[in-house]
Image 1 (tube, rainbow, N blue to C red):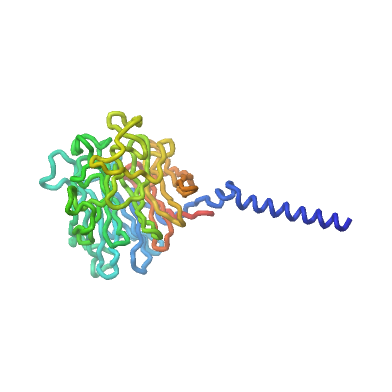
Image 2 (spheres, rainbow, N blue to C red):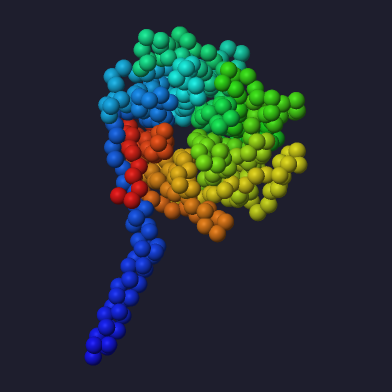
Length: 414
């Protein structure tokens, strides 16, 4: 009887251990442990488009608003005075919906010594630009006020690059410094739809045209000059081009561990995509939308056949992942953290806010997407601080109006 009792106790212990192991390893448990919550950091913004932390030791968070202001979150409070006010230099954005405005910003890698701050914004159409075009994008550098570290000297602007834009949409707008110390710039195809119409190459589209900066990832030095190892220096094509074949690469980031450049390219009517971008490669637009053939004559249906190479016979680089418009209609690029790519989608529709936060993880050589959280808000951007913590910027409005913009800290597992 004693031996039988001991055996029964051992069986119970083994059974309990098996149940615990099953709970820890089961997909449902893992999914629960990866649930995402949002902690409000600050509110009262108008269409926040970018968040960065200053490279110094102050811990200040800087938030760009599409309407032209850069505000500072300092000690948990939004300062009354903006760090930068570009409204007098910008086009006036439409409150109902607009893709122009203050779209990108970046601190110099040597900010603590040189005080330089870079921005990408939509300025009025420059003199000499093509007639009938919409505006001119500026990539500019400013200096911090010598007497006030919380203020930019507006008179210090130096325009590094001007890009004429035929329409108001598909501006891209991201600017980031790479591990090589160069400035990377994401530029959309010029707008309209299908990479077709006024200001678009009628035969091959802007994404494939190496003689325009539209539809490209650019790379320049901090002073605006061109790195001599850019792929088209001394060849047919604009010297500033680093990679091409993009529709609207709105957000991009470097993986801090591998140095790889992740670019989220907003799709047309069917597919959203993420590319790992390498120098000189062609990423397919408007020959393809994601991995699928594309034709401006039938944008709602993917043709069965299309060219498998670019117009110079070069191989087309495919996306690392894609999703269709049943999951979201406008990808918002994010960041790699712990080997996973965390990103968002703007909304399920224009009519009502319905943004999402998603994660992509590599399994058996393929990247798989999991939805982490649905929001009753428009997801405008994701941000990352120096410690690698992630943030999401949201808005209650589809256009740059009101003060319903918020900054949230992303917390996984709580």
